[in-house]
Length: 113
Image (tube, rainbow, N blue to C red):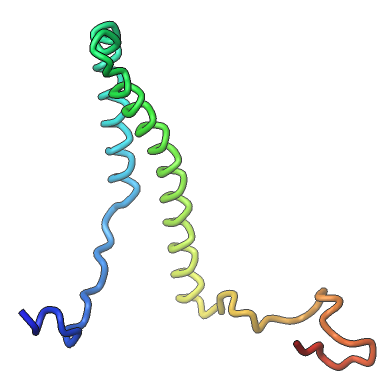
């Protein structure tokens, strides 16, 4: 057991799948569960279980936020790969200081902390 927990083994690379499809699928399931339970609202209300419906609706709405997020993430990853393939450097903080007023002293020397 110590060879598994000693830290000598390297962690495997993370698996990248179709994250957008996974989140869309989960969101659809939440909305379907909400719609399937909606006709039984009276029964849920009688048995103090209406939170089941609202949980499904909340899951669907949060899934919409998740879809927006993972689509933006995929676009950013794709853009970074294209920049890397084209040899364009990403934002590293070493770009030109043009337009960064207030970063130097009046005599032109850089500000220090």
